[in-house]
Length: 254
Image (cartoon, rainbow, N blue to C red; front, side, top):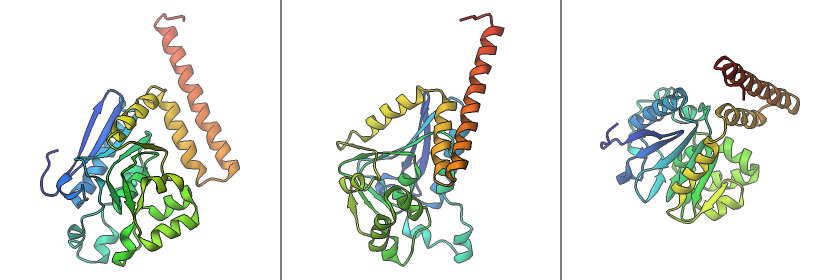
């Protein structure tokens, strides 16, 4: 995909790690409807590419992860019905079966914050700045910030950040439980790649099983969650049995 004034979202993969790059650096990687569609396409490609075990989300340039949706692009929706039935960018990220890591630098505002929250892990430069400024524009936001912040940080912190729309830095984000890895500025991508490489070194059915189990824990009762984990573990045993059968058929008796 080539970059133009509407931006692009680029998919690359090296070995078992894919990178999805929000590529509109002149506009702090602010999202356009074209980029919404491309995020969906990239996530589908990541799911369908067997060699990909882990996905990293990153922003092009030096200044931002993503400054959210382009306000001018939002003016292109004809009416509330068009907005309600828009092609959204968060559901495809949540549909990723493979572990997803956000490598965050600079601005991560609005939709950028939502993308980071939709990932499974966040590797964040200490210089990063977050905000959910939608309330200041007369909106409540629709990309999952309320859902994810409440689950990660608790109701009070979610209320504070979403009702004020205030900016908060990486240290604050880590303090309230939103950030798993806090790194020096400029080290977020290399650190994310190192973590992704470690995860990608495990069996993909195991890492996808862990993701499914943890995601399920947010919605299921304890009894249902335990049953879900057991079913996922059974699939791992099935994969191991398949590997043994293939080894026997090939004459490898190790």
